[in-house]
Amino acid sequence: MPTDPTTPPNPSGGASFTPALLVLEDGRHFWGESYGATGETFGEAVFSTAMTGYQEILTDPSCCAQVVVSTTPHIGNTGWNDEDAESDRIWVAGHVVRDLARVPSNWRSRTSLPEALAEAGVVGISGVDTRALTRHLRERGAMRVGISTEENDPQRLLERVLQQPTMAGRNLTAEVTTSEAKVYQATTEKRFTVAAIDLGIKARTPYRMTERGIEVHLLPASTTAAEIAEIGVDGVFFSNGPGDPSTADDTTTLMREVLEAKLPVFGICFGHQMFGRALGFGTYKLKYGHRGGNQPVMDLSTRKVEITAHNHGFAIEAPLDREVETPYGTARVSHVCLNDQVVEGLELIRDGKVVAFSVQYHPEAAAGPHDATYLFDRFIDLMAGQLDAEGAR
Image (tube, rainbow, N blue to C red; front, side):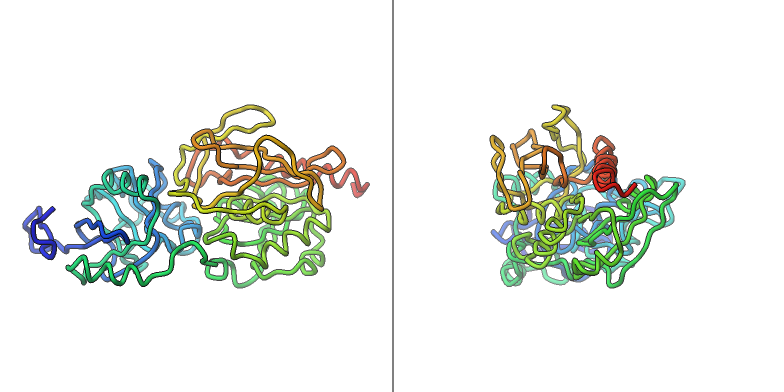
């Protein structure tokens, strides 16, 4: 740390070095080198423990308004390709790394990570002691942050950081949802039709359904229950997404209307939180959240421990030791995180059968382990059971 806080270090001494300044809302600051776009950016500082999959993480709409700190020290080694993006843009507000790869090396790489960020206009900072930064966020919690290549006074940048909105209270669904309905055809023999409510969905999720014989109708978050009924779906999927779940009243109302219609429901991440709210449970902000591809979760129905991919800063308040009666049936916790006992899954039971369920994590595994992909098969079983009960097939 330099003795003069307005004098950024230049470890290489080269003329091409562009300093960057990172300032947290509690005043702690870090110097580094600019990478990606130059300029200034603000967001919520969070850290991801994923060792691979930075392209999927940076293009995940759930990262909207977040400055992601990569705990893995070497980032950018495999460059940037045309296949692994989870949306049509980079969603992070900024990216913080320790050691940026000088030369990408992978047969699929089409450009480098710095070039991809620069093209997207996303400000990044490298050369940061990400271990110290992550320890600070673990101790103090996720907080607002600013990164700048234009400001060299930490106090002045701090003043602008403190003017930014906090993640608590932010409704970001409208920023990430699709603007128009899209249809993804089943890539095997068609078995079901599903309405997928886009709250910030990742590209791999429709793929996981279409490869199982599901025709997916991707719909904007503003879709009504009547519009879903017109399609004639066999089930409804509520996707992942960013923001504070306590602000998404319209989506919670839609979830309740879908449950009242007795349609099979599967929700993940933000969709899980909407499911919990619809059942009458509250939500709360985690101190620093779960982000990365190495989170241990137990499926309480099988007692199997899965290593899962997470990206969430809020959680559901639901009792782990008892079932709860709701207007739609009996609700119970189905999955729990073994690190901190956070609720990671919910089930709704009616007439002795599971009729709707959700998980807090990302079973599509992009990026992440594939331990939880069976949940898409569980959704198919749910819809098949509903159809059998109605005598539709």
